[in-house]
Image 1 (spheres, helix red, strand yellow):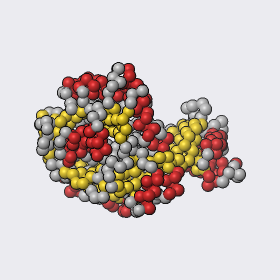
Image 2 (image 1 turned 90 degrees about the horizontal axis):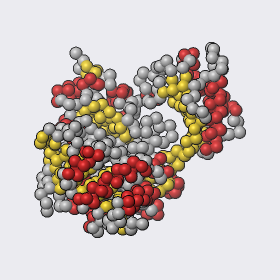
Image 3 (image 1 turned 135 degrees about the vertical axis):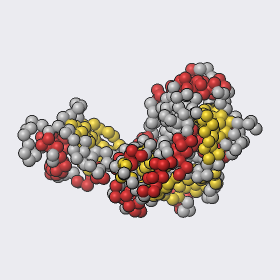
Length: 104
Length: 455
């Protein structure tokens, strides 16, 4: 049975990585959940491009770090932090599109 | 060389505060240094551009008083990184004034104090630009031209450990650093004591956020890091906060573009091979941190320039007939305002609506984008002058308030203002105009050290 990413992850957050990038952290508190998400391949360039309306070139990296049981996605902001038209100065509320991803 | 070296970090940003009991427990452990980071670019370019602090003066003084007293009572160094938030001259002087006040109040005027400036002269940057030694950091950083550099309100750079080591050698007890790479002041005291730079930097990376790597994590509590020959250990003096293997390992994710490769001034940290061991319920040991020196040595430049003036209004909408067509009505309001001010170039200002309760946070990428039964609407006008921004905003407000949209029944007014007056003059808006790496030959060259005489 599939489960939602938000129910498997311990931490699901977004934050600035400098004023021109936002980074999404998906962290787990057990290896099973981490492995399951990695194996299900739900976090990939296509998904991130679709959820965040990004071109491929604006995804800086998607890194799986088993030792910390975490996945990191960093992408270029369309609008820099705190400049004209920015909606999220700290980049701290951009995580929710990931919540409902279904994990097999 | 001592067997170990213990650093007390009171909180994630000087002025964020910490439980006093927790700090006093930390002091009881007889640390060898107190180090605190005061900086961040998270709050956007305004702090650097306008020369203002992230925290209030009262908050900074409250925290700093405890740190100064702790440092003097144990006769250990106190280091402050990125003073005043952005670490430019104005921010450093703001911090020095507070420090000066505290030292006089506790009659410790003879304390040796040094400061390290981090302001980079524009002339020097122009010269480096001509030599091709200034590169934008990332694909979306702005293009730096002599013109944008000229418009920038001063430039700072993040210092590495080298200038701080130099300041420590002068025998200063309190060192106030201008803009610094967050882990630098932590790493510097550890390196000075003879410990491995790789471990000292990694421990600094953890400590600079206060107790954020604990469970429960927070930037508003104390952390202790202890360096040994081949490893370091971290824990919070507050017994309610526990470090776990995963919480410490995962901390390197925080605010960084990569989970285990971290770039700093003249260095890259590689934390991919680290091992984390649970020592007791609250303490974690870390081994295997790696550090490589980079060639050339680059420092990160930060500068902000003024880009517009803003006036804004906050209002609520509860009428379902308006909520159902909110975006269409907002477009019609914009058009109407444009017609009312034919003499003002439409390119010289922008009217924007942010519909909270619909897609206020995420804008066009909001996946749900359905309005609730009430909306919070913030609208702003950005213009070249404050006068234009306010004039256009006032017309936008009055037009929106009375706009006779299709099917309207509430003919007395469309907006619920929480405040009178409704229009708020925000002042200038800034943007990061410099966010670049600059190659330098001497890591201390741009970070002069000055002895501070208590006045």
